[in-house]
Image (tube, rainbow, N blue to C red; front, side):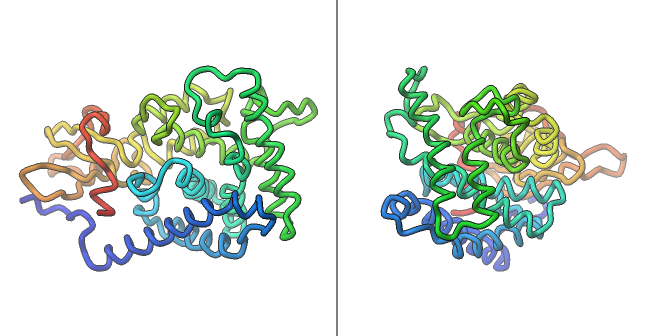
Length: 324
């Protein structure tokens, strides 16, 4: 059997998996309870959110790959519950890639958990509608951005971080070229945090299971779509940084190697965007990790990606290899 590093099965890694899973579950629980608390006027548990965000920051700074992997684990949580948490994880990772300070990452983390606070109040038949929106549907969707702004500004715990979240709540559907909604003729550009959150929201929405989506996009296809939207709906400079962070083959991509092996991308390379770490999966041997940046004695790469496959078609669940 191949002697390369085995998939995460050691006791220490199991402890990391446990911590990541508990952190994610706690965040999902707090976010899921938020609409009811807002409706009841009982406020939001900001202190708990900030504490959990700090754990995310610590893991991002330590370059813990399982945190990003957890954002792909949709077996236990539906789209509505997990989307905001995934956007938060991706936003903090992108912020760290942009060399934001820990204080700024804490602010960005809170912003990315609160920006869509009023989306749950849009009727489900509108949120999950397939096909084109009618005028009233658009008006309903547009209202949630203004309602989110007002709700956040009305919180008793209002501070600079929550005010920044209110701005992002108002702007996150405006698009980079300001062609979206709500219309704000005198606004010169989107807030910096809005542009970060918008990219991360796009990526998670494209790769997630949603009631109104005909089909999940593979991670590499999501990246291609985002490049097409770059300069219009998304900040082109930040899209490039995001792709550099995620790699050409983002975490969760199902790839075929020139060796004939099939694997799931587990971790992007810090510099070589086409050379991620891949979990090789086979019926014949135990899954093992292969580093595509490794070269043989002749100087050639030992393995290279030939093409990508759709994991949905092959019924391969990435998360089951890391969180089962």
